[in-house]
Image (cartoon, rainbow, N blue to C red; front, side, top):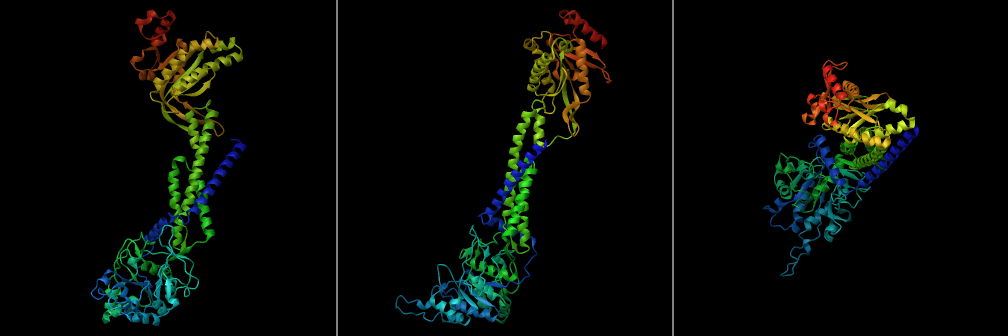
Length: 640
């Protein structure tokens, strides 16, 4: 390959690599925030949970008290409608604060006040003052208790007045593009933030951080300490229960909320995690929360508040780190696409996708959240584009090789060179082949009578016809030797019944002699074919600068010797015993020579086809042959 060709090839590969890298980088950035990214993020969290140590021994800084089916159907609370639960909530709040809780968060929007309810029959406000205990609790614990509001519902004015403007906080949560809650963006000043989560985080002693993702290791509804509202109230009736409640509440932020199935439920980032085993020990110190396919909103809030307090969070990586990651994988993908063979591209793509998930997984261990799909997307897209472009380039290169070298090499050899993208290695393999030597009879005398230009024209006409017969019979032209051709069947391509295909080609070659005489104007033009089958060394020989595909060994030497015998016997087609055996008796074979060839220890027989009208070993038929041919045939038998 010339320097110009090398430079052009390098430029093409560089253009492919740059295009693949650009496409990979674009794919990486487009995957950030895509609807499919969240699923991979949650699976990475699942993988991290399987790798990290069990954190069950870490005391959770947040606990949940639930208004659940157990509470609503209990003897103590079943007669109280849900909108009238304020008295029970006030009682539970006092119990928890007395037990050492840092603060209370009510994940309820108290949109009604019982003071406004009027008896429909008498018109009397018979429940006026019912909320007084709850309002007093809120007023007395301003700064330590908070109530919820949403974008569509606000607390009743009496509730808001009791808790104060700073005590009403929004419980809205952020959802990703797939509708799943995974992150929280706290305000710089947590205490002044309108967010419910920020207010409780400040109560727990947390500090403002950048937007973060929680990193739970288990389903939070089974991992965060929990008590039913009714159990909490009943536990306070005994000294033993109050002691257990102190273990449950001390130094914790407590959230109250509904844990009824499918009520205020969210899909959360913990959806693929395993559940924690049920708590053991005193019932008043914690129990199993109700299970559900989704996560109750109060547990989502509890986890978003508790995660920063325990350090189980990850903040988003900076844009420069994301760019470097995406660019590195795009470069690696482009390089892999150019270096990998076409058949292995799917395997390479799977490998780079798997490798793309390792940096985000490892980064979680350092509290850094990298885009979960960006690296895999950039690397795989770059690999596919580079691989497909290379295949297109190789296809074009293969067509060029076919056009340039089809006159010199077998198409099978050219295709193998194109597939390997390199010169074949020196050496070879043993294969059973059929070798033919085809030469122009009387070429020396022919060359004496004709000019050089005319000799070349005659030889080219002969070789053109002979070459067509060889190729159409799936043969391979090994080389041109002056006025002769060496051809091979079953190398480098696989050929079924190579002996028969070679004999078919030989018949066609001999049959074209009259047409060649007419075309060249040489009436004495004649051809001779010698065939032999056996094991030979098939491969590439030569040096670093030049090499060729050829067949070597004793089989080739015997074929050349058979050609000499055919010349001595004056016959057009001669074949060895292995070829004759492969043809069978129905071929009409006749022996023309038997003896021991030079360098061989065993006797060899040479045959021809009776249909060629030449000498054969059948005394009954000798009356039909010319006297000189009969003599040659008898001489062959005598020499055998």
